[in-house]
Image (cartoon, rainbow, N blue to C red; front, side, top):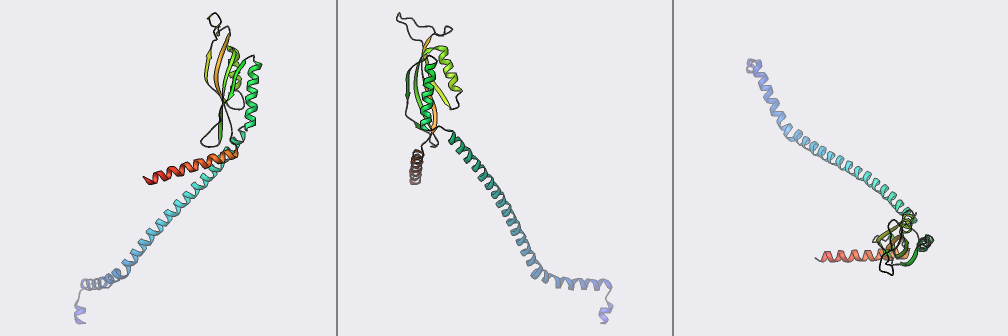
Length: 219
């Protein structure tokens, strides 16, 4: 005790500090440090989960938006398919076009419907018609103009106009005089695909894709 009483305040504080360090270091090493590591790992895991939740929410919102847009596109597609004429309606349209050409005084020498061409999508078909008209240049132009304004889409392609030769070897004028011309062209309109045909086309596409997929896997 006498020795302790002889210690200065500085020495007492130094000894007290050393004892505190001796006691606190093991406590920190064995208790505090492991707990801090556990807390750090838990915090990192929580942050990762929060990021995953945010990403899943974003995907869910995107998926919902995609589903909504897909529904709108499907509705638009059905509306457009409903506007496509049936085969009978196409026949009526073609007859009306030929009759209109005759009403204009055009000689319809050829009006031959070609083979239907089905689009790869199976949603519609192209109906080509080979046409040969003979008549006044301006009448032919008026006929094409009226065709372009029809509610149903009719494309006129491969137009070839020639002035017929007279018996004496000369050509009848076509320009300003509105002389007679022979016009060859192809008119193409579009129609709906019969449900049975559409089903068959879908099966053929599926078989083709399966075959190409098998061929690719064998390489």
